[in-house]
Image (cartoon, rainbow, N blue to C red; front, side, top):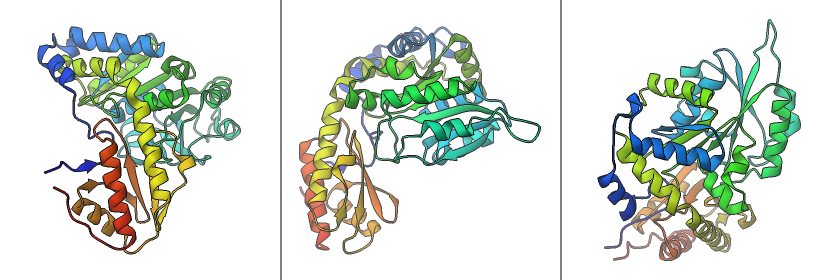
Length: 351
């Protein structure tokens, strides 16, 4: 029987054979004591890739973002984020709960922030108001369909924050997709920021982990925050080994995911009941509105019966992500299920 075609997230990918072999052969130490050679190699490789002085391996992008926020901002200071940003909406309230910061969310043009608006809210602070310490930019932007903040806009945001003494952190969970879509190097994006996180398990197929980079002083403090959050992982070279393979071998294929996402968008746009603008699909994430028979939940259930897994972030849309573990056959399978759903048909799970 055919395995389900899983479009729920690009985190569902499984490690490649090369990753599994690297994990089995990984030379390890104790990372909390600073002597795991494989972790150190991953951190050094990532720091070089993004042009920063140092980096720290963390279990997740959420921890990486929280460590960055806590290292850049003191309790009671303000952090600016886009209103649908991951750190505000989908990281369990970590910035307020653990870093003690005030979060101000800003509207945007489908995930791309206006430098003038950012400048308006970069406040020096007073007896009555919090000082703005940090701007977080999510690139690509998950909830705006994988939209890329281009390099020119990143530079503008850097200019307005630096002029006001405000740090800039890039939530680069999918920065690799931004690079693949625009031809921009990771170092060019990172040059616009004081720190950057990047995920190894989204798109690149590593089983676990993200990396956070910045100055040596910043990374030293972020490492302390990681420890406080329970992120010291001891013989984590086993995981870092897969991350090294991911960085070395998986970034160049991301354009394939983007092409499949556009094929999905174009196919869905041609089916009655589905609402999507293919021009808005820049990378590997797409959101499709549903105006056909039945509810979105019912559509998700029909998809599952047809062997297709998807996610519904709200009652009117489904979210679909392409990745290394879905191919052209999976795309056609989803589109066939979408055609059946447009007429209210449940379809059968193919053998």
